[in-house]
Amino acid sequence: MNLDLNKSPEQANKDSWMIVFADLLALLLTFFVLMFSMSSVQVSKWKAVVESLSENLNPERAQIQEEDWQNVEAAQIPIKEALNLSYLNRIFSDKLQYDPILRRSTVTELDDRLAIALPADLIFEKGASKFSPGAYKSLQELAVALESIPNKITVVGHTDLEPTSGRRYPTNWELSLVRAISVAQMIEAAGYSQNIETFGNGPSRFSALDQNILLSDRYLLARRVDIFIHQDTKAPLQAIAGDKK
Image 1 (tube, rainbow, N blue to C red):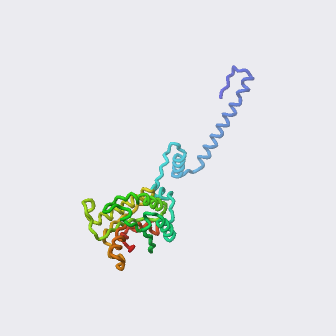
Image 2 (cartoon, rainbow, N blue to C red):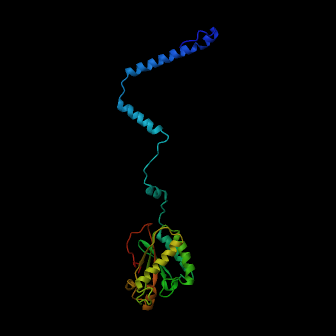
Image 3 (tube, rainbow, N blue to C red):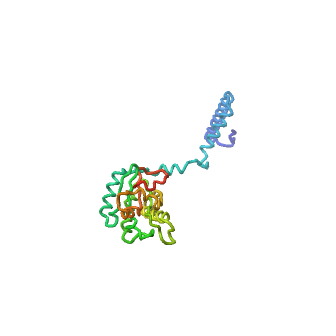
């Protein structure tokens, strides 16, 4: 660096540090050039380092991750353990016993499920799937109690041997199925979150009733809707129709 000769000695002394600084930079540059020339750089590894730094230090790089969101959402849902059938038997037996409409219902504990048999003549209008006015409130209270259990629920409708009359339900099969659907819809409306499977058996299980009881009593038992509470939170897809009696 050339100093201005027209400057005074004091000004020249003030700028002399720039000469020393420039010489130091030149020496450092020479040192690094010598070091680089003495080393052997593998081009492939160098490129890998450069690409890695560029990939991770770039703030505009989009963060894209593939996730199985279906499984993630399922993992976030707490799995409730099914309630014991004997415990549920005591609960619903007591509840139905003190209900003025549903006290004639029966609760039976089977091997793998609990069966609540609702007499159709008490909860439905004759030959129809519409709830009777007196039974509607009682069924709502029962639906609220069923809503809180995590066990799997299925509903099966039954009829007696007497043929139906009218155009709405040509046979007992349609009537039994629609009645089962009506009960299932009330349970779901109360807040039960699982899908309720419904079946219509018509009069197919009439012969399974106890032959020692009076025929009139068998007709009363045949006209019913069974609510099955399974011992697990998921029941196998099979027609469990009418194993109760």
